[in-house]
Length: 71
Image 1 (spheres, rainbow, N blue to C red):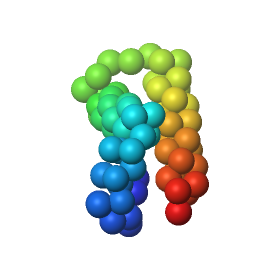
Image 2 (cartoon, rainbow, N blue to C red; image 1 turned 90 degrees about the vertical axis):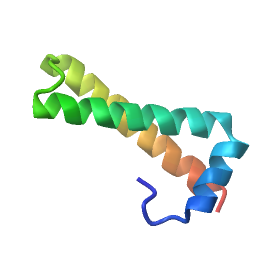
Image 3 (cartoon, one colour; image 1 turned 30 degrees about the vertical axis):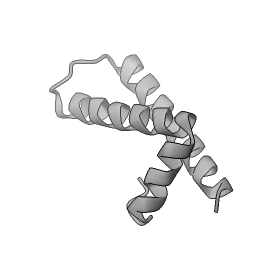
């Protein structure tokens, strides 16, 4: 996420908005956990994995809206 955006802009957003920073790190954490679960490294039931994916998507949508509102 945000691969095409300048790193300086992303860092400025994280410094300016504690909510953005917290959500960004939560999204990264969920992304890793979902990947681990899909690879079988992190044993999770389907309901928990589905909930994590929904939370991750919600975080991503919110981050994109926050980023777009500043540009």
